[in-house]
Image (cartoon, rainbow, N blue to C red; front, side, top):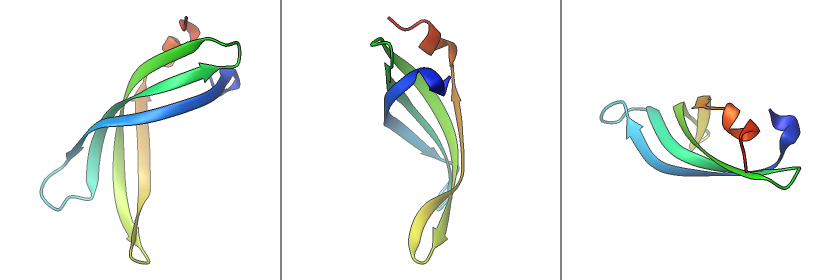
Length: 76
């Protein structure tokens, strides 16, 4: 999939925590792809993330994305 992608821009629309003070969240958004052949694709995605604190800073300890990769092949 990535061999066809020249650029991508992720936008997060919503974040759903798994409860009060949770460090695990679900995310919903879209990604705008610019393909190497000049076509563009806009794809919705969802993700699951686990946040960890290291040295006083929050970082992603785990991140998993769900999206329809066929949308890149069907780009216009």
